[in-house]
Length: 483
Image (tube, rainbow, N blue to C red):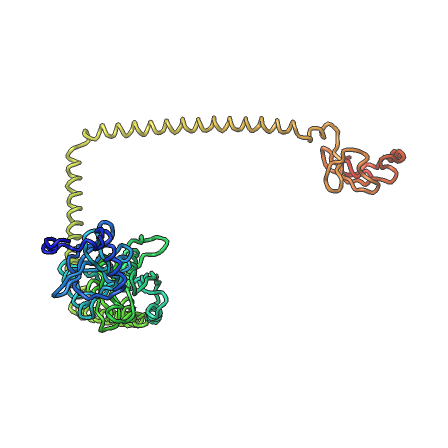
């Protein structure tokens, strides 16, 4: 190296040459190996929300310096507290460099507010923002149903909260309860609670699973960090948008979360929420009985009062006989006058009729005589017609009688035949029918005779001998018994 070169300040020609990439990556390894995981406290600046890729880029600063920060998409979804502009936080991650721009940055894996004061400041800022949007307006709040049929509860299914609610409901007025299980603390808690509220509102009325008439969002007590899920905008907006009246019962009486402002009613404890949801059944029954008793007593008093008033008013009314005495007298006078008037009118009309005279009555009398003559003629013709009709009927009846007589067996008897009947009156149609000793009846044209079948004369027996001729009787020679 010449003196001129040394004078110009040139570097020794034996120094190692690095490429830009080598220097950048060497610095990257050095920073990552030296610091590893660090916790950095600072105020978020330049936050514009997640990038389209899902990653977040912003800066952390204090009063003297600034450092770039990045939260990868996977880590951002797991963050319990989401970044907000101006929020003082404690970021946990690892330092690294970005060779593309020669900058160092912190890759954040965990983010939390820097103490309770920071959380309270964030909470107050968020409260003012949501209140300005009208989410906490009193006119948005709906009244609770007096006696809901179904109660929806959003809480952890394994904690003491749900048991307290169920026991209190059982004591006051048992109702049908549907529990939507959620995590009430942790990274996914806010999303689950918001989804549960919207899920209950999305249920159809009259579906397989009944839609609740009132909702209870409940959680036990805890620190502000434990209750932070109920301060998230997603939960507050879901509560404000709920069409079903909602009771907030998060924490103890001294704990306040943003869902308390958006809910229709705030209960200091989950047990108090159950008391708000339903009345006491025993008190309702007693109240109904008391009202029924009071109503009956009031009705009895009213009837008695009306009866007393009616009795008093009736005393001032005149008697019925007095009311109708004058009209009755007028009626009697009018009836008497009418009787005289009718008599006079009859006399007058009779005189007018006589004045008309006989000539005027002659046509009427002639008409009456002709009508009388016509009536006599019609009566005679009707009598003749009746006589002819009766003669026709008699002749027809006589012919039918003769025809009936021709078909009768009595005509056969008159020709010398007889009918033989057994003891039961049935005709004997063959000689093989009767047996020896059987009683028979023989009908002739002029009467009937009794007979008994002699032994040896039944069918198949010896021929009977001719009977002796009976001596004539004094009855004029009429036939008698054959025996």
